[in-house]
Amino acid sequence: MKYILVLSVTTFLLFQCSDNKTVLIDDYSKEETQKITPLTNSWEKTVPFQEIPEGLTSISAKSCGVCHQDHYEEWKHSTHSHAWTDPQFQAEIAKETSPFMCINCHIPLENQQENIVTGLINGDVYKPVNHKNPRFDKELQQEGINCASCHVRNGAVLGPTGTDKAPHKTIKDTVHLSENLCISCHNAVATISPQLPCTFETGDEWKAGPYFGTKNCKTCHMPDTVRSIVSGHEARKSHLHYFMGSGIPKFIDKPTKMLNGLLIKTIPLQEVYNAGDTVSLKVSLTNEFAGHKIPTGDPERFFLIEQAVYTKDSVLLVEKTHRIGEEWKWYPEAKKISDNNLLPKEERIFSLNFVLPSEKGWFYKTKVTKNRASEENKKYNKLPEDYPIQITIFEEVNHFKNE
Figure 1 (cartoon, one colour):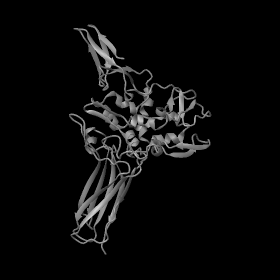
Figure 2 (cartoon, helix red, strand yellow; figure 1 turned 135 degrees about the vertical axis):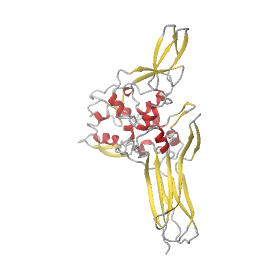
Figure 3 (cartoon, rainbow, N blue to C red; figure 1 turned 90 degrees about the horizontal axis):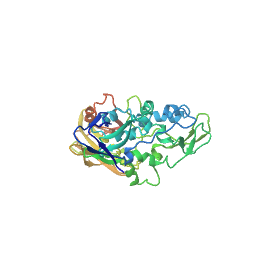
């Protein structure tokens, strides 16, 4: 159903845009018709307002951590905990081209959002109809994707067992707490505007991969453990809550846990080379462990494979850098130019060929890095100088001497 709003000669209406600018609609000359269309896509909507379950005083992660201490400490080392405060994300949503719904994955609860969007003027995502949220919780907003984002619904805490021993209402719901909950954010595919595609396809990649039906998101990113859910209680099966991923932290002083899907190995050289021989250095990268492409998610992520050869005096002789990732043209219309992401179980060999000037004393280095963004992107977004965009996941030095 579409709602029709008629603006008379003396009507003044205020709408809050996604960039926090207030739009005043006035018409002194004629009657016009504005159509307010309802939100239809899941990614346009928040998780409805959640009441605090009986027995609790708050649904903040900090409050949950009073009892669930291990879970809370693990969550604090996850990028989920910085989903809102991440400087890169804040730089992105500050842009005029950033639509309102981008925040719905980073602060998914209505409790966390200052404004409630109820529709779109003429279906335009850049003209949301906003209302001030009288129950907005600033502290909850800063926690990004917190415990309640997944575990609190309809006045109860959802868990894998539904124990009746907790001081709060607990309901068993493993369907809600399945990989489908992960995919609700990590598989957002839509064209918001010609310049703004949303291309998070990790869920689709997993469904098309070799582990679908046998392993899911939680298998790798929330592995099983046995421990006390609350200190002093009997140990039982649980899941780690680091949400291990790229391992690139959002803040230099707040490290996160890395989950490496790659098997990396340098290929041994032959035993004897002579001056003037052509040498081929090779390194093999296999997407051995991930059920999705590598890299996945944000199209600006990429891997660099660096190979360098040095003389016996540590003088650089030759070097080569390879890249795994997508290439995009963003203006005037967003378009993917290339994509060489590694498929699950795919092996790729990268080579550096050079002519050996001396048969003795030379050595070579191999280095593989994960990258969240390029240095150019970091500068463009005016991110802090110490904002981390890269980590090294493999580094090896090999010396070669003929007898």
